[in-house]
Image (cartoon, rainbow, N blue to C red; front, side):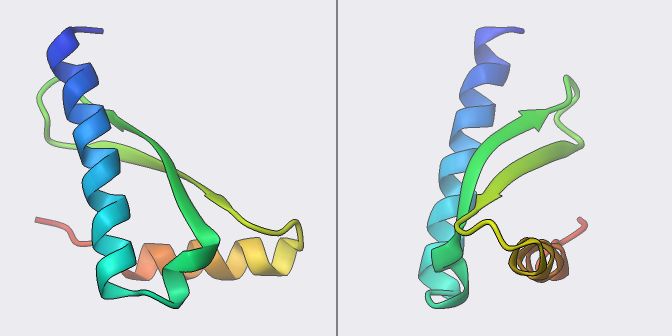
Length: 73
């Protein structure tokens, strides 16, 4: 992976984390954006996250909430 893609991945991870913390303060406290993987053409990205707590229902709820915030450009 090129240095450029590594920097883009890190920047995207930081920006998504900052946006969620600023815009959705109470809902985003259980989520941690743990990584990003951008394609070489920068058109798509996979975002990886972790959820505080080990209850499967909490994890599913957090994933559903996060997917509801996805924006397709």
